[in-house]
Length: 116
Image (cartoon, rainbow, N blue to C red; front, side, top):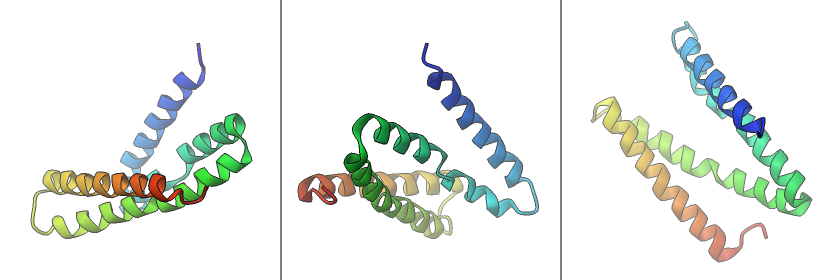
C-alpha cells in the first residue's frame, strides 16, 4: 500500500483543523493564509521533479505562477458578490469564476505553449 495515500489525506485534515482553530481566534484573518502555504505544492513539485526531471519541473513552476490568477479572480468575485448575495451563493459564484479562468488559463497555456 502506498503510504502517500494515507499521509496526504491526514495532512489535508490537519490543514482543515488549523483553519478551523484560527477562524475562531482573534487573528481569524490568518485562516485565509493557511491554505496558501505551499504544502501541496511542495508535494506536487517534488513528485514532478523526481519523476519528470528539472526542465518539466521548471515548466510546472511557471504554470504554478500563472495559477495564482484564477485564485485572485475567485477572491475578487467573492469580495464583490458577498455584498449582494448570501455567503453560499457568493462562494458558488466565486468558484464558477475560478473554474472559468482556470479553463481559460489551461487552454491558453496549451495553445501558446507558454513556458515550454
